[in-house]
Image (cartoon, rainbow, N blue to C red; front, side, top):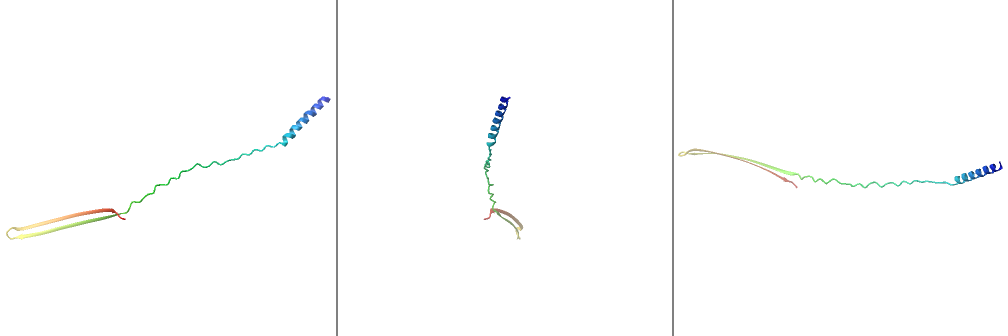
Length: 95
C-alpha cells in the first residue's frame, strides 16, 4: 500500500507539473488580410462627333414669255409665241 500511495503521489505530481507548464505557455495567432488591388479598368472615350456644317440653298426660277404679231398686207398676219422656263438649285456649305 505504501508503494501504491507513492505511485499515486508521483503520478499526481507529474500531472500537476504538466498542467502548470501548459498554463504558462500562451500561443497567439494573428491573421492579416491584405486587400487585393482592384483590376485596372480601361477608359475608352467616345469618338468626337463633328457636326456637319450648315448648308445654304439657293433656288432661282425664271419664266419668260413673248408674243408677237406681224402684219404684212402682202404676206398676211404672222403670229409668234415663245416661252422659256429655267430653274436652278445650288447647295453649298456655308462657313
